[in-house]
Amino acid sequence: MSSDAAASRTQADSGAAAVALEARLCLRSDLRIYPPREGSAERHHTVYDPVSDISYSLGAKELGVARLFDGRRSVEDIAIHLASHQGYHASADTLAAFEKRLLALRLLSLPGQAQPARLRDPATGISYGPLKAMLMLPLLRMQPEALLDWIYARYGWLCSRTFVLAGLAAILAALGLVVLRFGQFSTEAGALYGDGLGWLLWHYPVVVASIAVHELGHALSCRLYKVRVTDFGIAIYLLMATGWARPLQGDWMALGRRERMLTIVMGPYASLLFAAAGVAIWSLTAPGGAWHTLSMVMAISSSLSLIPTLLPIFNGDTYLALTEYLGVPRLRQRAFQYVRESLRGRSHTEQIAPRRAALYWGTVLATSLGWALAWMLLLSLLSKIAHLQALWRWIGPLLHPA
Image 1 (cartoon, rainbow, N blue to C red):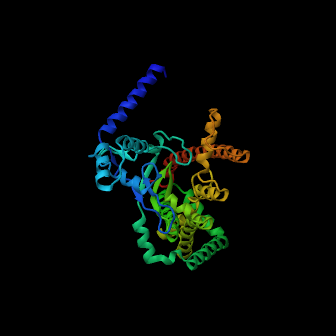
Image 2 (image 1 turned 120 degrees about the vertical axis):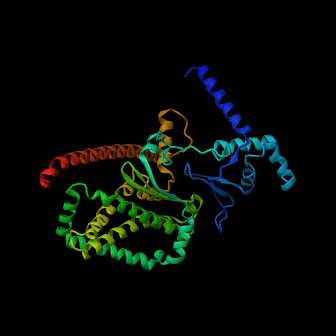
Image 3 (image 1 turned 45 degrees about the vertical axis):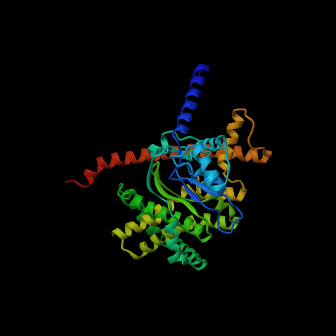
């Protein structure tokens, strides 16, 4: 880019910012504001942005000033209001600087203006560009606090040690049953998944239900430890179902490591309990029936859906447990930032020991290799499905003549 073009771009950006500020911005209505956790020494409020999945901390006074940006008041009006109603004197220049700070964080917008999504992976800082918007099919997204309170008030026993131990016994019993009747189970599984693509009619509904149970396991554990959950959702991404239950970071970090690890484990535990229910139904129903087919998919597809979250190359449970074990929050994001700075010859924002540098380089290399292998596997799977469909269209009429 030429210097003239760069100067023009800078002037245009400055002009756009000036116009935005003159238009009297307001605090975004979709932001979720959480007060300090009860009993905590932390006095800051958490402002959660559901668009970017980023949380910010504001003091009570800062939040009070931020709420005065309502789309009607200018900074001069806010200064007068603070002086006359709260006895707090702030100059228009100070308030203008605060406004620019909130605008830079995208916490302010023009009244009625939709906030564009930040298409970045929060764990790496890498931009997806248009890919995430095109490839992600959202099925459910909600703020789950009210639902979790309702479930916990009526079914709090789900979080009890007795229920968890009984569920673990059920999982082990289901595994033992599959081992004892492995011949029958493997034969029926081969017939189900090898005979055409009819299993796909059951696959996605069952996997989505399994992921909902998985994330509910995380979320209920958070509720047990009084950790607020900011976001709960399920989506289809690259033909794979995915889900999330995001705790409020301040609450999460206030927990002990043991409680955090137990909360991480409760997701896979809930998924395996779902699969165990499938094995139980399979053992009680006759082959060929709808319930029998459903139970097979519950047992197999829900277990296979655990694989991505157990692979540390993805932002799943194993990766999160690894960051807890190593004591390095946001490991992948820090690693990618460190490697980008190293490759560009920039000074590092984080001064680290050689062992930590090796961890960062290893994390980036392993993640990149894992992503490449995952894409190759996905493309191979798509190719095989396409060939199976073509083969079935050719051989199907021969097997079932009209």
